[in-house]
Image 1 (cartoon, rainbow, N blue to C red):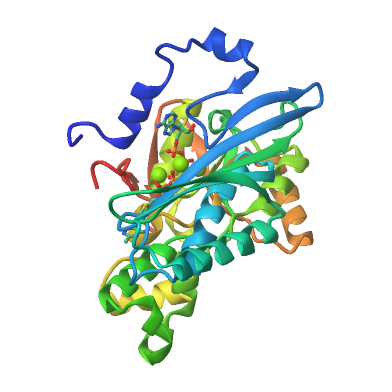
Image 2: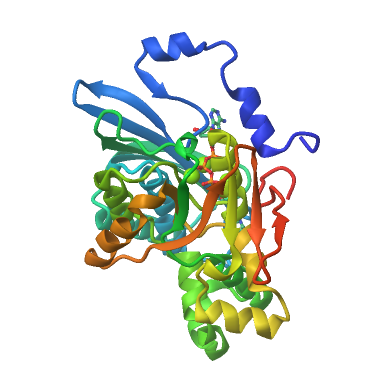
Length: 345
Ligand SMILES: Nc1ncnc2c1ncn2[C@@H]1O[C@H](COP(=O)(O)OP(=O)(O)O)[C@@H](O)[C@H]1O
Ligand SMILES: Cc1ncc(C[n+]2csc(CCOP(=O)(O)OP(=O)(O)O)c2C)c(N)n1
Ligand SMILES: [Mg+2]
Ligand SMILES: [Mg+2]
Ligand SMILES: [Mg+2]
């Protein structure tokens, strides 16, 4: 597998024996390649289909998440891909694989977290599957969401004249993960360690991410949003996906990208650049997208009225692909298409 990166691999799985015409005939309007698929449900409704997996030692360890967090985040990350399409989540199916020796209390705690998240976002858990396995616990959550015809917010919809926005802080989750890995303390013992309470926001961002369903729905209803993605692999990777799918370039303005106080403090203590966490960390589950510049102020007003943040962090530039970072001194540097990648990281 080392010679194939995650996104090249997914491209290899795209199409092949199922032609676009076959997908269309089956009602698939958007197939592999966006955050979720869009499928015709009826003349006035579309289903949005997505699934996400969390697997032990890749997405979590005993020292990085409590059992309830694992279930919560498995549901949250799948729900987030519905937000990334501007959809409303409706139903979920949950596949659980675990070693025979897994204590039942552990699974109960995971499901407490999973249902907490499902209830919060009004997702009905309608079924699933359970198997034993060799190795760690794996949770795969499939979520079905809904939107109106032609309303799904696609990666490919960015246009010249658009601004780029983001719905909140990034980098906190990656910093929280690094901090927890450094502490290397089983989550059952976190409460006994006052040191671990030093960065509650970073730990919360990593363990209890908040999928931006309300923001996604607002973007859809506003009619102003063009492209949209959720940030699971880092801002750089997601901006690259929008740029490539839309065949445009993106400039991100360093000073405009919002950063939390805790990340600033943590990064400076580590002697690191907060931007590294923000651009390349991932698992933030904020929404990054584009909207026509002439509607940007109105969009910001609508967000303000809803009590939600929205930051303008860049703009779409000439018609060539790629992402650049405009630094404080005005210089522009190309951003590597780097971020979390399952097979090259
Ligand atoms: N094994 C697979 N088989 C078919 N499609 C896949 C597979 N893995 C991912 N995809 C599709 O590839 C696209 C990108 O997936 P992914 O990078 O996981 O998206 P995201 O980061 O938004 O969760 C999605 O449309 C997803 O449905
Ligand atoms: C123990 C541990 N090591 C590393 C990470 C970091 N990490 C794992 S997966 C991932 C990216 C997001 O997960 P992915 O499966 O790629 O979700 P998707 O992009 O499909 O939404 C990151 C940043 C982690 N969460 N936990
Ligand atoms: Mg996504
Ligand atoms: Mg995914
Ligand atoms: Mg990913």
